[in-house]
Length: 109
Image 1 (spheres, one colour):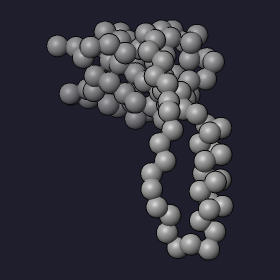
Image 2: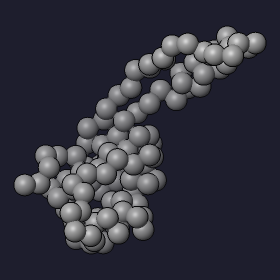
Image 3: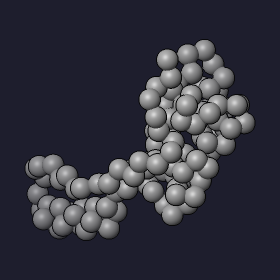
């Protein structure tokens, strides 16, 4: 929250924030409100998590929902397959969902 506050108070404040999780996003929402920013009119916000609370924040939080259980399962498979190897090849891309709610919008002009 303190870092977001310092960015929003400075010259050239960002028009968007990407938060690692919903808790961080909620902190940014609180700072934006405290400093008088309108979300999403003046600043957009997106999170990588999508807990149930994201739907009920004010405004409702736009979030990327990741398939956490599938990610854990795939990571375990890769580790098991890598037993005895010094390198693991390939990328593993899993589907995700973008839940567009009310914290994102066009950049202000």
